[in-house]
Image 1 (cartoon, rainbow, N blue to C red):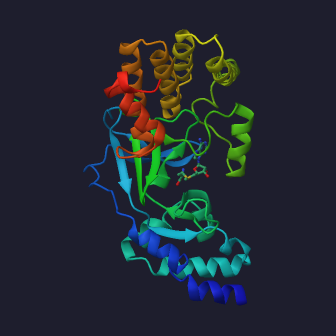
Image 2 (image 1 turned 180 degrees about the vertical axis):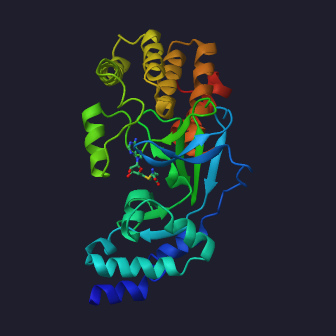
Image 3 (image 1 turned 45 degrees about the vertical axis):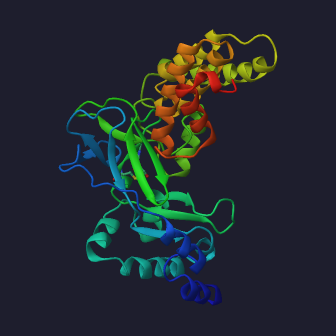
Length: 318
Ligand SMILES: C[S@@+](CC[C@H](N)C(=O)[O-])C[C@H]1O[C@@H](n2cnc3c(N)ncnc32)[C@H](O)[C@@H]1O
C-alpha cells in the first residue's frame, strides 16, 4: 500500500514530474488525418477487428498520425497487486476527456491493464535512463493487426505515432504492421507472438509449409550474406553483386519495412567501387526508406550519410 500511495501521489498523471516535463516539451508532429480515412474498420476472421483499405494507398503515403491518448511509465505499476494496478489505471482513464475515454475503452482487452498491455506502444523518452520507458496508448492505431510481412511501417517521433505505406496497397487489402522483429525465423516469431497471447494467422504464417520453408531459407540467406559482407569489407572479396543480391532477397521476402538497410549496403559497396550512378540511386532509395522508418527530419547518422551520398557522391567517405 505504501508503493501505491507513492505512485498515486507522484504519478497521478502517469509518470514522474521530470518525465512529464520531458513529455510536455515534445512537439506534436501530427497533420490532420485524411477525411474520409483510406480504410474501414471490419471484422477479420480469426483476428477480431482490423482495418481494410477502401482505396489504393500509394507507397510512402501517411495512413494515420496520432498523439497518445494515455501514457504510463513502464515499471513501477507492474509490481502492484493486480487489483491496485487496475484501480490506478482506472484513475488515469477517468481523467480522459469523454470522447478519448470512449475510444480508449473500445480497444481489445478485458480490463484496462490488458488494454494497455496488448495495445500500447513502447517509447523511451529519455535515452537509456532506467525510468524513461513508457507505454503509449494510440487506440486508433491499435486496431491494426500484425502481419509478419506488413504493408505499413510504424514509428514514434517525439510523441507522434505515424504509420506509412511501405508498398502500394490495393482496395480490400488488410492494413497491417509488425508487432515483432520480422527478420526472426518462423518458430521464433510464433513464440514471440504467443507471448502476446495469439497464434499468428497472417498471410505468411497461413501459407503452405513449402512457402514458409522458402521464407525461412531466404531469412537464413540474408543473415549469411550480411555476415559475408561484413567480413568481405576488410578483405578483397567484396563485389557489387553482393549488394544487389541483398536487395533482391529483401524484396523477394517482402521485407520492405527493413529494406533501407539493404539499400544502404548496396549504395556503400557501389561507392567503394566508384560506380557513382548506382551509388546515388541506392543511396536515394536508402534515404527514402529510412525517412519512412525514422521521419523526414531524422538526424540519424546512417540516414544523413545516405542523403549526403545521394547528393554529393564525390565528397562521401566511401
Ligand atoms: C492490437 S490488437 C489488434 C486489433 C484487434 N484485432 C481488435 O479486435 O481490436 C492485437 C490483437 O489482435 C489479434 N491479432 C492481431 N494480429 C493477429 C494475427 N496476425 N493473427 C491472429 N490474431 C491477431 C490478437 O488477438 C491480438 O492480441
